[in-house]
Image (cartoon, rainbow, N blue to C red; front, side):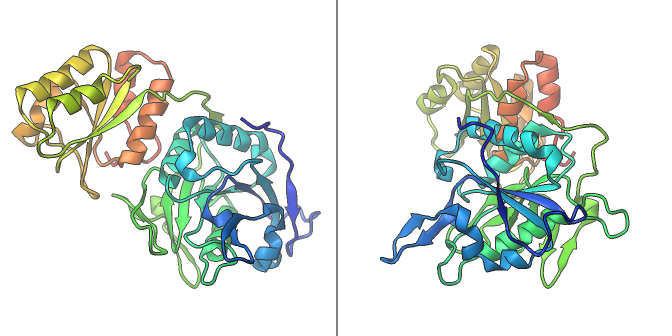
Length: 361
């Protein structure tokens, strides 16, 4: 991992550096399409991110104090690991007292996983951490990078008009024209600008001519100080069910060496096959201490274990129902909760509890 003492680069804006009333925001560049530019030959190449103000002259008109922190080696989001999430959380912790909000530039492919993971790691978060990126690189014709970054910065700086308190004290994803809670985001499009949707929960804000915040949907400011958790359990897998799945496939997944938790992607409202071999595979995994979290394959699904006979046995085995959690939030929640090293009873309680707005009880 890189050193936490990475250099900060001030970016020129309308706000004077000495203006203490202007929001101070930190842009953290991790990698992704947003950091690519077209070469003279027409190829996509990583740009020198220190020259961001040249690629986006719009930044100079913002009434914020902006600084940029760029990772020494940009990460393609397909290569992001839990260690990267922990390092990013430590970076935010290092600069938490000095900035009013954070914007994380990230590749789109795993942005929903990263936003969910940071939501869990950063407990009692009292400042905005806004993930954004682009489908089209900076400098390309019709790039969405400028609009996404400018609006993400405005959201990170937003305050309630009367109370002047933080408007969005959450980890979230802004893309195209919607602001989504980090534990509700899902990438649904690779060829259109509207790459993300908010699953089973309304957007926190919409960007039109002006920003329209849904304050009723935004979590309240915490009453305690930020706590950054240092551990994630990486012995986690996902088992999607499909008609014709075999005992060999199920057994292979549930017997992965070091497995401690598995997200079980079931049908409809949490239904699964009732074949005895299938149920015995799950029961045997539970007896070995492997945690199983039941998540619906439906995009707008909710698990209700016991609603049908095909899910009643799962609850008897000891599988935890995930309610309306997304797969991305379920995977990272397993990593987070199992990384806490708690008792069986407390682990079960937390897996079934809404920790960061990931489930609607």
